[in-house]
Length: 427
Ligand code: EPZ
Image 1 (tube, rainbow, N blue to C red):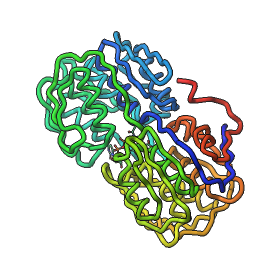
Image 2: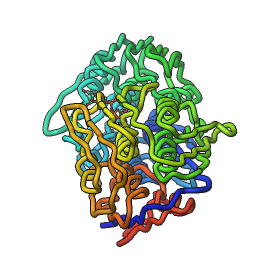
Image 3: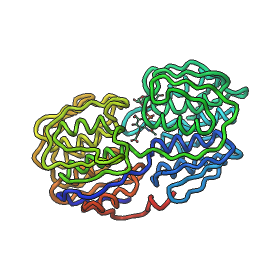
Image 4: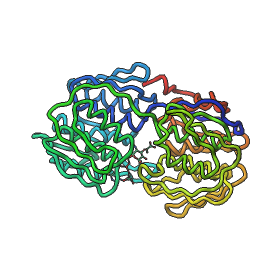
């Protein structure tokens, strides 16, 4: 199993380019199942979750070709409208094929995701919404089976709470339903907006994506299209924090600064200089320890839960006490225990982490528990004195493209050891 070995203490300097968004690419790839024509998607990141989605599309009978960052999917004939357990257990976002498969073929069989390191993460809201669109759903033997032999019909869907992939799943089902669907309390994340932009290029009629009310007029058929995925805002945020925690001077390029505004505003209050020096780039400078600034995760445009762990890593070396409140997932503080092994002073009280800033962290052997937790350990290691070894970096490979190469290029002393795969070149 691969590990990262990091020796901290070098301020990062140079340019960190951001890849395409994993969480935008996943639903975009699932959306390719909605048409029998080829769809070409640009800026698809070379990360493990994308490789998993590619296998899933191929399992259904779609042809998938990758050339550099461009992936073409041709789902001319679908042989199996199914997402098997073996795939879903490694990537929960596989449930994103439920909506498109039932919309295109009239049936879908998708394994139910089990528990997850960060919370229970059920898909009950996806299921209820698809029932409202007229699908008959049965849950047995660990699978959700959806049937709509006569096709789906438009409906009013109102989510009890905001769900990102739930909104995306319903959007992909509703585009081929008869009549109009209105989604209320829809997720406003940029990834939802990006998916709607792709679907509209394919001939869908969607209005309001990116707001909490989305209207979809169903069409009979979708066509092929070309689309470029948005930059990954979570990778951008991770890099901005890497620059600050290392007390460096870095330009984070190929990003959309407004997508990380909730983070950068806090960082400015904490003492970092973050400037949009040119379109699509943020220059980050930080010359000392930050001031403690409290943070609560929220749905977009609030502070992303996917950046909570990385922000907490920065606050472990702040002047003062930071209250970090996690409102989206019930168990997303696993990184706190590992950060404590590096000398961080963190107390967890329910959904709140109370972080008393320390003057310094110390390198240690730690292990990653999930994707963003691993990113927080890398950030902590960049500022820690001495050597840190991070085990289970396969979590990191699920969502960050060649992170060790990107960080090494701006001066980080980071190495992958026991390398068994090169995800960036794969997929
Ligand atoms: C998406 O997950 C992202 N994944 C996650 O990114 C991200 O953390 C999350 O949104 C929140 O922003 C992808 O886009 C592929 P939710 P998703 O449905 O859609 C509860 C990363 O690190 N809920 O918005 O699965 C749920 O348990 C990841 O890249 C239900 O109760 O999240 C959670 O508490 C991890 N029932 C809350 O809603 C449901 O049917 C929000 O979850 C669905 C969700």
